[in-house]
Length: 552
Ligand SMILES: Cc1cc2nc3c(=O)[nH]c(=O)nc-3n(C[C@H](O)[C@H](O)[C@H](O)COP(=O)(O)OP(=O)(O)OC[C@H]3O[C@@H](n4cnc5c(N)ncnc54)[C@H](O)[C@@H]3O)c2cc1C
Image (cartoon, rainbow, N blue to C red):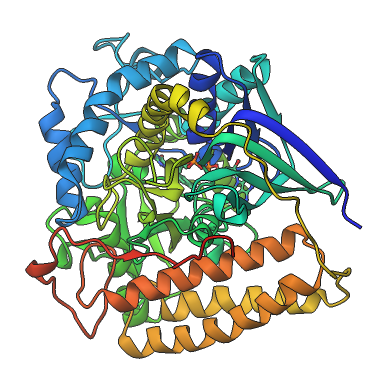
């Protein structure tokens, strides 16, 4: 028999990364009660791992127009220009607020430069025509996450529930008394006690981060299972552009290190990509692929490395930044320098071995620039949302900016709607969680086997280089696996592993379906059977929506 626990807050935020914490702080400061859920410890997410920084116009030589144009260029005619402009222009004020909350960004003076000591040291990354990336050494995300978790933990109107795993959104269609669909909160597994709790709220924000665990190789943390997209899809929200998966070209290649990223900022500081030819010499190769060479956009670099590895039979590519001194590198990249040294690579003397890996999902839960999904009470922000900023390819360091700005805008939108929400949703009853005849599973192997299989075929068939045949193979397999998981899901008590698997399978299918329906190559989506961009599809999003019946 499951125990029941009911919790009631004005707002429920699922995720404690940059998007979730920012939204929560704004809502709490406006006088509302907020619950933040985190499926593991509060600081376990992609935000904490971000190294490069946050793109924002702060340099007088830079301009909003230039940042907008760079974003549009990367997005391959699929960005929503209005959204891009709104987010870019809101950047400086949002970053200033972050600084007021205690975030520190590295200045020129701290790096020993005499010019404009008080000015931020601005990094340059692939696809940016200007230096505009604010950073805290090379641990920008850790710094931001630290100050936000501290602020949220101190706030009297915010309660952070760590190790609380949102299972599914509670929708009005679960409740025969509500006339229209709306989100009423979420069912949540308390991981430590194994109890399922009911959280009731006027609004719910999905801020669940990425979906890297869908792929065999990823830079993402273990929490990144596409939960936001999967829950939203099951609830009947629109999901868009999931075919656009960014593969980071340079993850450290070492058997003993899991998912460590060599930031694009290293190439920004002059590192050159090289390949070891069969004759043992290291040669530059990016000239063949793009005029910006090693600083070309990520998708171009990832595909180039993939193709060079296939051509030479090499296990990895290499980054060469040996023209910089040890002191300079330690100063600018202390974290990366130390990690490389741990595996025997001194960046100032040795080439750094790197391979591509899944890094970022450009698509997600479809929202407007305020994070609103169109379903009353349901918002999404951060990596799990698709606002139209990234289009078919994300410009480096635009994701922290988007998470920050959209979380701000969504809290303003929610605040504006608050009175209306109170009037239209009076004390709505929500049905209790039912576990039916579920028992404890004694077959963990079903979970681990399916998990491994999905991640491997997604890497092989729905990765950097796609074809119709590969996508069809992936579709056949995911259909079978999803059927098996569905049966397993209803027969056994929910556990974090089972929930991860269920969400990974749903998200994998969303990526496959979007990839199959885009019959062209654009931005991050490359299908060798349709190798060219189709101009008729400029500005055309791929949108999936599950048809849900009321009261089902
Ligand atoms: C290695 C790495 C480096 C990066 N570097 C940069 C960079 O330099 N600049 C940049 O702009 N971007 C960078 N990115 C991308 C950027 O960090 C992320 O897109 C961004 O931090 C996402 O923030 P978020 O708040 O959406 O999600 P996250 O920070 O990932 O947080 C997600 C949260 O959701 C919670 N969660 C998920 N599912 C559930 C559930 N079912 N129930 C309860 N809680 C749940 C998780 O526990 C976590 O707290 C990088 C990403 C990685 C992986």
